[in-house]
Length: 95
Image 1 (cartoon, rainbow, N blue to C red):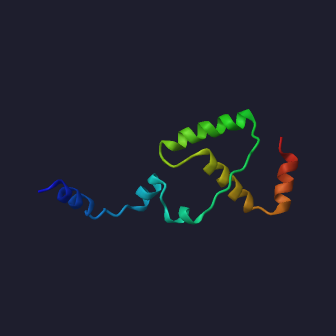
Image 2: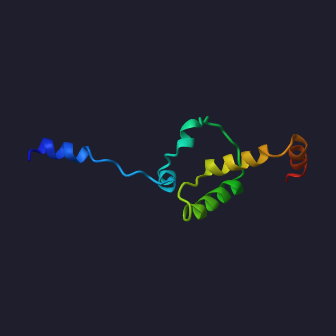
Image 3: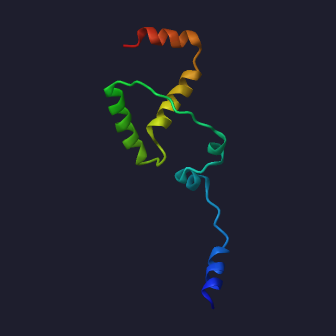
């Protein structure tokens, strides 16, 4: 068998379908392809950055895809569930 034939045989193998969990671990989910992201500059306190680093490290063990950006997006989505009056009240009592 020639090398060309061996390579063609190896390339033509059907790939095994990935489970949803495996695609999530690779960061290749179908829903993530539809979302566009835009960079934003945020000012955070040093304590907040340290907390984000700690919680990210803890969550990476059981769930592989966790990062600081994902946690910030989660916080934003939780804020979106509130109405404007609730957010203003929370800002008044913040710090």
